Amino acid sequence: MNYQELANFIFPEAKPISYYEEKYKKRNLPEGAIVTRFAPSPTGFVHLGSLYQVVIARKMAKQTGGVFFLRVEDTDQKREVENGVTGILASLKDFGLTPDEGMISETQEIGNYGPYKQSLRKDIYQSYAKYLLEQGKAYPCFATPEELEEMRQKQEAAKIRPGYYGVWAKYRNLTLEEAAERIKKGDPYIIRLKSEGREDRKIKHHDIIKGNVDFPENDQDIVLIKADGLPTYHFAHAVDDHLMGTTHVIRGDEWLSSIPLHLQLFQMLGFQTPKYAHIAPIMKEDEGGKRKLSKRKDPEAAVSYYTEIGVPKEAVVEYLLNIANSNFETWRKQNPNASIEEFELQLNKMSVSGALFDIVKILDIAKTVISKYTAEQIYEEAQNWAKNYDEELFQLLQDKTYALKVFGIERGNVKPRKDIAKWSDVKENISYMYEEEFYKEPKQYEYQKITDKETIKRILTLYLEKYYEEKDDKQTWFDKIKDLAEELGYAREVKEWKKEPEKWPGHVGDISTVLRVALTSRSNTPDLYEIMQVLGKEKIEKRFEKAMEK
Image (cartoon, rainbow, N blue to C red):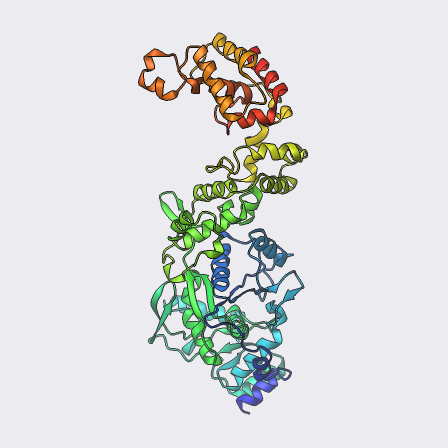
């Protein structure tokens, strides 16, 4: 018996690899175009670190006129969760990171290089495993779990490297006839790689992010095809990245140590090797040290967390670009209104060590992002978020005309307001503009500098009787508050008071603070004139009366 006969015996139905090489033709793309992929397992929520990889992989494809696709690696079916693909797709859609090709639902896909779900590509993997068997580069292995455990214990006791290699590869040199005989008898088996590597030799490799690295060659006879006929991750990714035309594998640096094996697989299969870029993880400070952002310990590790608290998707993506390339922040300052698509990401400018996670920075970016929204955009986003997460806010926003006036306060200015970082902030930020919310609980009025009750009453009474006109423009309105300050013996201008503070009990700013606090029960709000314009005379009078009662 020869290798060809054994291969035919094990995989009688498998097509020759020429069939797939012809079927999946080389992509017709412009020169320099990059093809990247996101290849998650449907085993749980999408981690912020995974989203980070997606942002980078998709950006590199988009800016070079290439392709970004989604491949689902579901060969470990014991760990799969129900609707896992749906969850992955929803997370990508939430952040505007929809792939060009690949899975678009649990059962549907788009693109010419599918199936994009590995469990549906079993025949393809078996063809390439058959090809390796024909070359004598793979073999059937009959090691039982008990034999493997016994081998592991012996290796541990002898303090030597664990694994299935060299003299420990018990079934590597079984004759082809013996192997065929055992398969005929029905003995369970798997297909292993017959590694050509030696641990005492080094490979040199250039990683786009990590730079030049070297490793011992891979000498492990890894599993290619498991007992259920499905491939291992290592084998499947090599076959898929070759057939799908992946030019750059962008992934977490926990995979860096797999480079010797992956390069070996590409070489033994006769494939061109893609370029690899290994991304450092997002880190978190913890008790004086640093650790990876953890699915188990950190709620903010799940991308759904940002959707739930209502951080705009652009803010999260901008934050991830910010930690990807340190020059992004400068670019953004120089191009405040440009689309992030215009920023050119460079893999070789990425940090070799992990960036520190910073929620404050994310919320800061979010404030800037939201400050550029129109009132209509804020209304739509806040309402969509509230529909799922805050029934009270959703009800508050039912009067769209009024809500647009509220959200329109200090919008579209040269320096727009930056008081909203996430949609879960909205209710707290606008509740005082709604009568039912404003009067819900007894008010606390912190008037700051002016605390004398009679003086406060006089300010409010005099303002309503003499100075308030609903039709006044902003300049007239402010001039009248200065007139009120002067009548009460306060400085008309803050700078006047600063020159001679002993001359007046305070300044116009202290007077306007009394008006602000009486009207909103807050000392810090957006533009007071605009608030008054939205509330109108009747509500203002009622609120001032309420304040005077207190």
